[in-house]
Image (cartoon, rainbow, N blue to C red; front, side, top):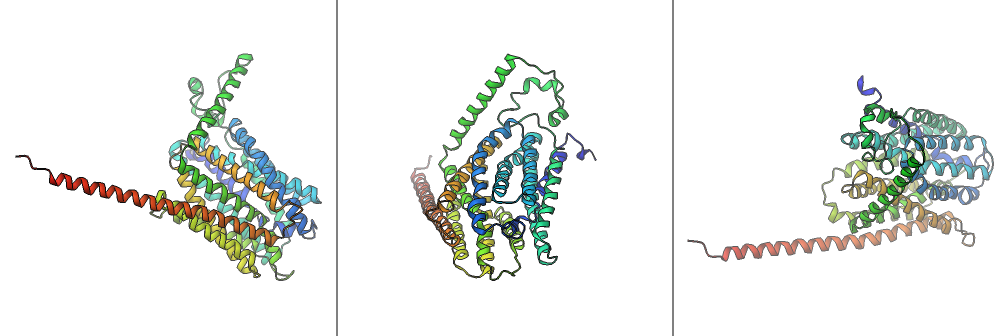
Length: 468
């Protein structure tokens, strides 16, 4: 019973898992495009793909860095609450606001939601002891996959068996994200954060704060005010920013980390773009207007397959420092082939299957990449590196969207767009195949030279006269 009380690691973990599950349990999401082009919103597929969906990319790009800094400065909980409010605003607009402009506002609020994800995954660093970090991280990431899968399956069952209209799927999604928002209000307020409110800065006040108050955010020390305190706060802010810059420089001084981060940014950019517009492609591939969509089932299968592949790769015994980049190149070839086939096929089922292969392959590779980047980083640098990599990915996606989607002179069809995305992954594959082959050959040569040197040393030792 004590483990469920405030002040223990279990209490915030349970709340985080509840929040993660209900924030991701959104049965309407796999059916967003047919909902927007259906009778309730009555938008054209051109308006959805070229005027509505790009807004999410641009808003996410603009908000991401300020949100990253504010998340740490405000100590996570306010940003998680903001994310919950963003979810509610998004689905209220989806349900009740008509027109293209309203849907653009909806995508902007969803951009706030996705930019705020850093608050959810960083919160555990400040309220949970280091010995529980790996366990709680796995809980939080797993529960979001479970929530997304449950939402996709529920949406598919309601559409296929219950013939429920997409509008009511959005009602269920609104209810789910509202539960998540209410849960976020009960999260303990951290006393510390990774950069702007470090524990070592607070050490002088440690005797004045009880262990429970550190988690709950209750400080019994009398507040101080005045110009001197404001000056200290400004100095602390500047020192934190300078520390961030120093950490950034030191982290990216590693060549191997740069290559892994490069794949992360490039592949994540492509994944975001493909997943954001895949429903538009499926709409184009539909054999008839009366065809029952299986978007929810496909998303569920892709997520479960990707989760299984990610779990399995964690148990593969392989020297990833040698073979990792080659694996990135080979599986990027698989990604490119899947996207090309999605583009060329006229069969919706083949298109569905290719998306499952693509998403599960990406989730497997991102797991390998995450492990390779994080294994030699402290938790503070872990947050910094993945924040920077995500920003680069969204920046690249914004450029890709501006060129492929919003360049009016090109006016590319959805088929041509996916041909470009397939070519994009083909370029990634060529880069990392070349780099991977070079790394394998180089490491083989090093080992061969070492073995020859050891053999020569052994022969020399054998030729030495024995002491009498």
